[in-house]
Image (cartoon, rainbow, N blue to C red; front, side, top):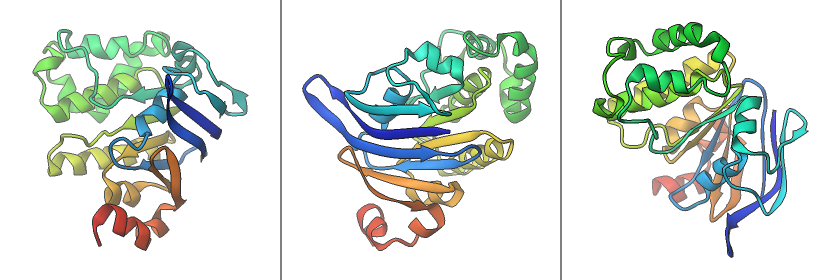
Length: 233
């Protein structure tokens, strides 16, 4: 579904990604793991068209989308929930959700709102409430709900558990599994290594802009290098 070939990217003279090869198949959860500064968000933003790679290819279902503007990337069904949620705090929950269908899914806006509140009933209880008054967990739900309004075919989640309580982290990972079981391919970009591996099909580990480990998630859970690098074991 998504195929990155030798992707290189950075900011001006600073090189961040060094020849990334990565694939996501239809219906998979693929995790990209790594610490702060590893290059994970840079990769997301290049796939989403926010920044342009300096070398390599980005293919989506066989189509070369390298350098495609972000609005056209969304039109194809690649939708990112960015790190930090990026909701519109001075707009209501309903208005935030409706904006999610601005480029894609507009004809089925009412139907899609029903689907979102089926997954996030807490949002329906306070449709008119300003989004900025929600808790961190509720804001993350809203950000994912807004992305669902655009009927994604590949959903990119950048650090969805960041800043959440342990209980809400469990809830968030359960939600990701639920969305995936509905057939949605998910690219999960996280620092939360073990919980990501527990729900992912495959995983890549990034350090300093390069992939240093990859494989089936169930196998990587017991990888000694991963445990040493990220769990201190």
